[in-house]
Image (cartoon, rainbow, N blue to C red; front, side):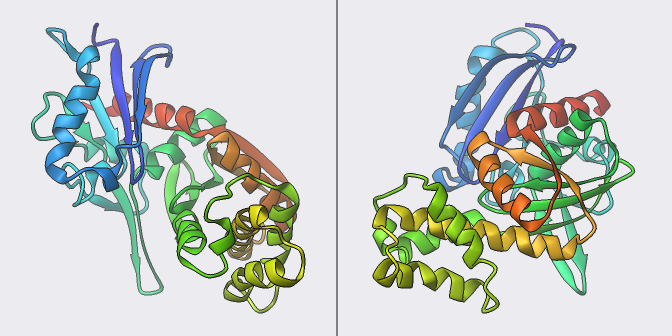
Length: 302
């Protein structure tokens, strides 16, 4: 191995993903994935787990550098990295990389934050994907949706991240499905049903709001023929529909946006976005965005 390679790690709340990447071509030479996210490890376990996962790629006199993004840089992660005030660009992230204790030539990417009287929010990991998506789209100004456990909607202008909001859609979906009465029929059934998801999108538009729409999962199960195997899809439609509708109100004039995520999530969000009036949706795979973002940071790292 040579310095022409780097290792990109996306380490979040629920999963670990690592990629051995060619600097010149951006080609993924090898990859590793697991469910060992923040929830599965203690702070003391992070360096040992990472070293074991990356060992086959680093057994050289000059091992490739490692760039780690995501919750790995939180206080509960490997080592806390700062969260920078907006606006920031990719160069600012590279300038504030933090050395990962216990591993040579390994760097933790800082997060970002919004602290205003009317809005306080934090982000770790998605900022890398947002800049990567911007590079892949070859644009400077865009609205970017990054769905997940804690979905992010990021606004980028002139190549800078200038604002963002978080919607805890994925985490709340899990809580409703597994820990509430409306979600009870969906404890075991997890198959996606397009019709039930569409019903959930419609319910999300009810003027009584999200809390009523979620309870409709129970009401429809009892009296409107919503089968137990479809309750989960209905709840998903309510959650994603509510998130997208709220963002539509925040960005009423936005017609084009970047949708960054896995293929299954992108399909759900695309359906909700079209229903909410977003006309042009550019889909980008989350792995591609992560790699493009980290490669951009690495090129700026001195």
